Length: 187
Picture 1 (cartoon, rainbow, N blue to C red):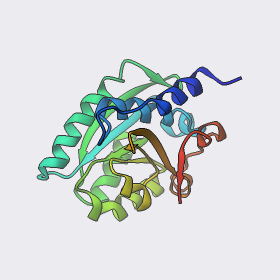
Picture 2 (cartoon, helix red, strand yellow):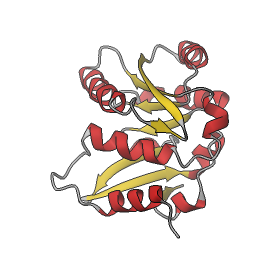
Picture 3 (cartoon, rainbow, N blue to C red):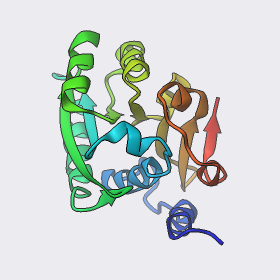
Picture 4 (cartoon, rainbow, N blue to C red):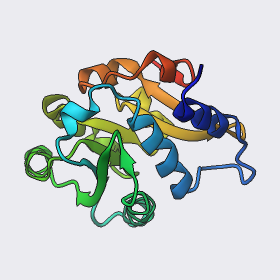
C-alpha cells in the first residue's frame, strides 16, 4: 500500500504545468522538499533542522532575482517539517570554494539550491558538497548532467523530477527505491 507522501508525490508528478516553461519557485520548493524527505540519510545528516541554502552569484541580476524568489518559496515551508525536523532557509553568495566550505560547515547546511549564473563554479560547488555530504539541487536541467543531484523541471508540459543517482550517492544521499520509481534518473 502506498504511503501518503508517495501518493501526493505521484499526484504532483502527474499534474501538468499549464503555463509551460520553468516551474514557478513555489512549486519547485514543494516538489524539492518532498523529495528531500525521501533521503534515508537525512536525519543523520541534518542534525536538529534541515538547513537549506539558496546559492547565488552576487552581481548577476538573474541569479540574484532567482535566489530572492527561491528564498521566498522555501521560507514559506519553514512552518512545516521534513522527517520531523524544522526547515530553515538561508541565502548565500558564492565567493569561492573555501568560503563556501566554511559557510556550509558553520551554517550546518544540508542542502544547496544552485541558482543560475554559477555554471563556471559547479566543480567547486560539487567538491564542497561531496566533502561535506550536502545534497545539491540544480535550477537548470543541465546542472544535473554536470553532476548536481536533484532538480524539478517542466519538460514537455509535465512536471519532472530528475535525480543524478551517482552524484547523490557521492553526496551521502540514499534516496528510497519508492522515490526512484517515480523520477527520471540522470547518469
